[in-house]
Each structure stands twice: as C-alpha cells, then as structure tokens.
Length: 545
Image (cartoon, rainbow, N blue to C red; front, side):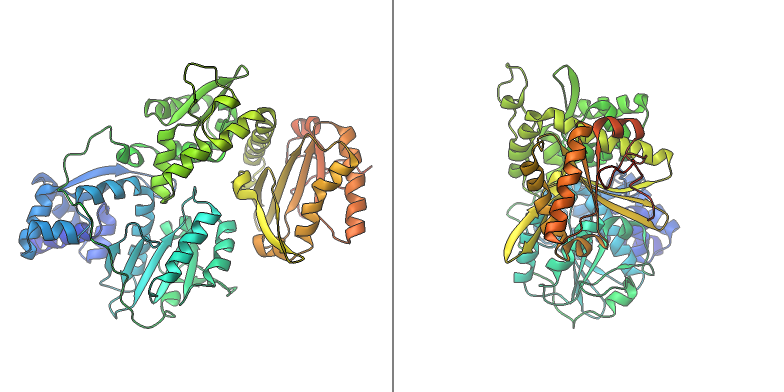
C-alpha cells in the first residue's frame, strides 16, 4: 500500500516539477530515499518515467526524471481528470518538456532552492511560469507565495532591469527570492530590487545551489547582514495568491526524445564543456591556449573539449591572420539564450560568428554579429586582453590566488550619475582576485591609442568622474584598482605624469597602476609589473597594502 502511495506521490510531484532528481524528489515528498528510489525504478520499468543525465558547474552529476506519455495518462487516471485537462493544467506536455530541458541548468538550481525551502515549510506547492518575469512561484503551507527570479550569466543589465520592471507591474507576492550569477550583479540587482513592492531577498545562484535553509547567504536590498533562508522567509508579507499562469496554446503528449534535439544539449554537455561555452560567450575569438588557461586544463583535455563542442555544432574554429580562433556558433548562442531566458534574436545579431558569405575568407567584414565583428576588426587588441586574463588565471593557480570573477567589456562597464548627467566607464575587463580574506577588484585598460597628452587625459577623465562619486564602493564593496597596460614604456611614463596632473587638478584620487606589454609578459599580472608614479620601480598590484 505504501509503495503504491509513494508511486502516486512521485507521479504527482514529477508532474508539477519535471526533471527532479531522486534526492530532490525524496526531500519534497517526505518519503525516504529508499522508498523513492524503488518507486522511481518501478515507474521507469513500466515506461511511465524517463531519465536524462545532467551535471553543471553548480550541480553534481545526477539523473533527472520526467513523465512519459504513459505517465501522463496514468496521472490523469489517478486524479480523475481528462487527458486534455492534465496536459493544459500541468507542465507535462511536449512543449513544456522541451522548454524545461533547454533551461535544465537553471531548473536544477531552482529545485535545489525549493528543497532548501521545503526543509522549513512542508508541504510546498510549486508552479513553473513561461513568458512571465518570474521563473517559478512557491506557496508555503500558510498561504504565503514566494516568487523566484533567476538572472542567467548571459543576461545583460538592461534586459534584466526590464524584467524586474515587468515583475513590479504584476500583483505582488508575499516575497521575492532573486538568484544572481555574481557579486557585482547582485549589488546592481539590490538597487533595482528596492523599487519592487514587498520584501526581496537576494543570493548568489552558486550558493543557493549547495546551501541548506540554515546558511546565511540571503541579503536584502538595504540590510548589511546576510540572513539564512528560515529567517528571511519569516519576514515576508501577508498571504497572497500566486500570479495566474496563462494556459498554453498547444499541449501535446510527450514523445520519445530525439538524441539530436537542441533541447538535449544541456543534458549532453559535461560541466567543463559548459564552462568552455560560457567562456567563449564572454570572450569571442579566444585562441586555444588562452581558453585552456581560463579553463585550467591541459592541452590534451582541451582538445577533447573543443572536439566535443565542434561535434555538437556549438563551436566555430577558424584561422584569423594565421592563428586559430574559437567562438560560439549560432547553435551555441541559442542554447545560452534559451537557458537564461534572453532574446535569441539579440544574441545572434550581436554575437554571431557566422560568415555573411560562406565562400569568402573570414575577416571582420564577413562576420554577421555586430559586436563579434568589432572584436575581430581589432583582433590584436582583443588577443592582448585575452592574453592578460589567461596569464592572470594561469599565474593565480600557481600563486594560490583565486580568480573570483572575470568580466568581458560588456559586463565590465559601469554607469553612474555625475553632475546630473549619466556617465560611464568602459574598461576592457573587470576582475576580482582573492587570497584568504584579502580581495582585490580591478578594471583593465589595454591601451594602444593614447599616445598624446590630450588623448591620455581623455582616457583618465571617465575614471575621475567615477571615483569622485560613491559608486566604486557601492558597486564593489571597496575601490577597484585601475590597471592600464601600454605597448611600450615611453607611453607608460608619459601617461603616469598626465594622470598625476589630472588627479591633482580634479582633486580626485584614482587607485591607478600602469605597466607595459613586455613587463607584464615577463613578470605576469601578479608579479612586480605595476608602477604607481613616474620614476617608481615596478611593484605588486595584488597584495595587502
């Protein structure tokens, strides 16, 4: 009798939450692991449940389960509903399954979060959403509803701000749990979240994927102290209903999964391959050695990764000026856009590496993506920045430094108000280096054009405005260094003199360090390669001061 009840509970929970793994299923149903494992095995034997493998950089390898057509029919029979009602009311249709498979990495993180909430509030009611600003909603036993919003790694600032604005136009839930990919975007989201009605709690997605209800990882838009999940959910608004979900236009029975379907890519890729895809999305036209340094793998393993990505049609491997360059294919861009709920059209328009004329040689004029075209047009500068971040990762591993974050130009930019006007800085990269309790954020400027004093002063001006405001500390917790690298030491000396004059004139101190290509290549970014004032000997940048 208990076995039959456990199987029925498993079917119902997998209908509400497709692609749970068995540990999550045990946590959410309240049945023992042994009972859940036996029930799932029997359901698989009878063809009511099928499994797909899954692993990501945030979630360990596991098998995730969903209902088959036979399972949907059995569920309709158990609940006394028609098959049509079951398909339209629950996320069990072919269309829902495809969408959740495309977002499987995000699905896994949200299920881990739901399991942590379930440690405190049981039983938990769960609902997925499509084409709405929230990803899911949880309803606690006392009727309070909690919206969950996740920002993906490829989601840009503007699109996510619009998404939060749309969330603010919906009837408010009792609270919002927001998952962010890194510390900088969490700080940006705190400012945006302050405009939302009701309590909002923010955490890093990586922390939420492995933390239980007792871990203090949640922050409010204004509070300085982190909270654990139990404390956060004790301070929500009153009971509220969850947002209405629009019924789907189509809802067909799930069919047999096609091994070559695009939606299965998140299931087929290993964690290191997913990291490579994210790195190629961040840094198009990487050379293989630079990609290997960023991944931290040897040449043989790198060859396996790139060969696998090429076999799956996710990689563009071309020769540019005699050197191999790697970029994501359109299929890879679509995979990331689906995973992170961003615009497929925008991703292709900006980042496609597809040649406009397949029969013509590949150069910057023959690339479809507007931003990848610009990077290829300035390929020497692009390669120099790639070389710097690759050297930083390589040297960091040998010197016990953790490279917490490395952002490409589009995420390294900062926007702020100065004298009533919207201003910005646009560095070539942003990063965070950590050793123990010491943390060093930095901006990188690889400078090749600032050779005249007027041009050098113009390069310093945006940073003078930025550091005259409180935004550097607000954005990063402490003031980032500005690292500027020149092609030769003559330009470096002149730049330091110009920068000192400009800082004195503006009465603003910018934590600026400069170097030149030969010195950085010889000593490495973590070595004695940085000069603060003209005439000083080279010193370390990333050390306690």
